Length: 336
Ligand code: AHG
Ligand code: MN
Ligand code: MN
Image (cartoon, rainbow, N blue to C red; front, side, top):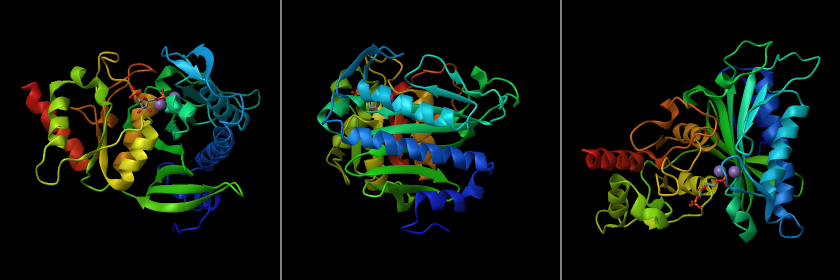
């Protein structure tokens, strides 16, 4: 039974059996993510002090310039998960291909693969605004004993066994669902311990915040344009408030607490949508649904989409259930 002031370490041990496939392996995996989060948090916090700000001078696999902290966070999470030998494969937003993880004595015996967006909202680093990390965990579909293949990574979101995010904000939090709702743990930086601060987080059914990059408005599909006008209309409890940080984790976190919707539809720069199905949309959709929220591409449930490639992008609409349902209605009407 979760209780306030419980540490994340205690919580992991106590809730080991609430995962779909209960095993110490998954608990150890969450534990290493907790450790990597602390290391990255330390670096994010001192980012203004040292020469780690700015771009690393490389373009990542999706053609975006990599910020130094992106690279740092990627390396920290990969090293932590690799050294401890608890996963059989990792895919990261920052790497073109997935990684096969194995050691000589280990012979591909691990069961889980991890997909990760090591640093989300990286354009916000230089201006001291919240960033995050997103992770998604699946059980492999290929038999243990052999190297993982692409099939282990291209699974529908419904097959996730765990997912979560870390938000490096005014305080640092790790948020992830177990069988008993979505729980938020806040880091006490003085002693380096996460405490359960937000048990059983839920999206309010209906919210009054909409989060979208309105600079792209003229390129949005008609249904999204109609929904934005609906948000701005003076009627019932509208107009809604517009809030957009530009870091999915932070926008999602605020909307889950206060009630709201996040939208990243198709735009001229990103005709298929910007966000990545495997590293961003599926894990956030998994968390949203367990917190009574909803996630859609405008027409379909995100978690039901069969991925076709590692870095696939899709339109993403996620938040309070009735607001996402409203968007789907506007999209349907506009399409007819
Ligand atoms: P990342 O930093 O991992 O590339 O992700 C950035 C994503 C998402 O977090 C954010 O909501 C969105 O891109 C912002 O995009 P715009 O700057 O185009 O609004
Ligand atoms: Mn991201
Ligand atoms: Mn990123």
